[in-house]
Amino acid sequence: MDLNPRQVEAFRAVMITGSMTAAADLLRITQPAVSRLVKDLEADLNFRLFRRDGNRLIPTQEGTILFAEVDRFYIGMDRVAKIAKELRHTRTGSLRVAAISSLALSCMTDAIQEFNAGRPAVRVTLESLNSLSILELVAGRHFDIGFAQAGGEFPGVSVLSLPSPEAVCVLPVDLSIGAKAIIECKDLEGLPFISLGRNQPFRLKVDEMFAAAGVARQEILETSLAASAVAMVASGMGVSIVDPFSAAKFENGGYVTRPFSPRLTFDVQAVTPPHHNSRLGHEFLQIVRNIFKSVTSPSFGAASADAAGEHRSREHLTPKS
View 1: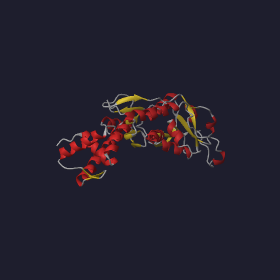
View 2: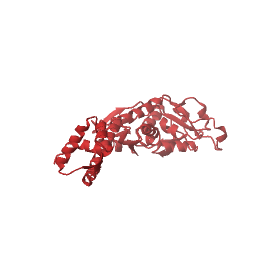
View 3: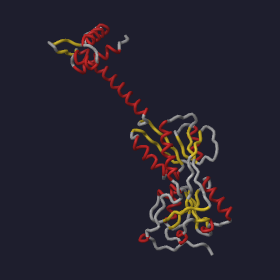
View 4: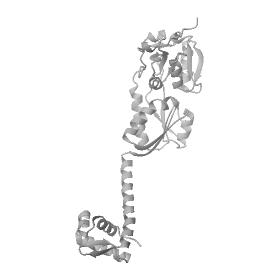
């Protein structure tokens, strides 16, 4: 049996309002039209939906049972309409993000906080992975967007450029060369140097820069996490060169950041599955791009060197004689 939607709508309106007249007002039609629609529905169903008690309409048992199903349907339709509206304004859904650790532990937190503020119903997943894993998993559509050091084309992904902020030198707060406005390769000669993992493109750029300058460092420590490198610097174990996001995120008064010369950029690309027109992903990318743009100076978020009362008693790092 195919029910007439207009008849069902009239029946629901009568059940909600309790009278034909009020239902007519709700539907913006005449009372006789409502009465006719209900009567036609009863004829199609072959049972009565209402009985009269004076001027009152009393639903029959069959009418009450039918209304429960009809109302459930309309509630579902209202829910569908609400979700559609939220999707149109990107306030619901899910977003899967993958990022290299230096970003996942720093600026991704700020980006997700800003993104979530206007879209509290959107479920966001963030995973920290190496660049190759990000490229492979985004290509397999396991993530909606990734932030990696791609370094060229990769099959199965679209690569989008991001602004390239400058790396910074991080130094223990009581190291004498911290008084310089800009640190150069020669300033770090012979100093204990904390390097990033050998498989990271940024590490290769740092090594090539010191090799070109003919400057030897005392490479005694290595870590895959920029956050760990900064923490080691803060504890007085050495110096390092890291991205400005990690340098700013983990400031604790135990180190200072300084611009570095020659200019060394921290290059990251956003990657998405090809032809993946995710509005949520696009809006999140714009937030991240704005964060990258805001890093206009290598001294971005630098830890203050004025924590004189918090200096720990330790020897200054000095170059080997």
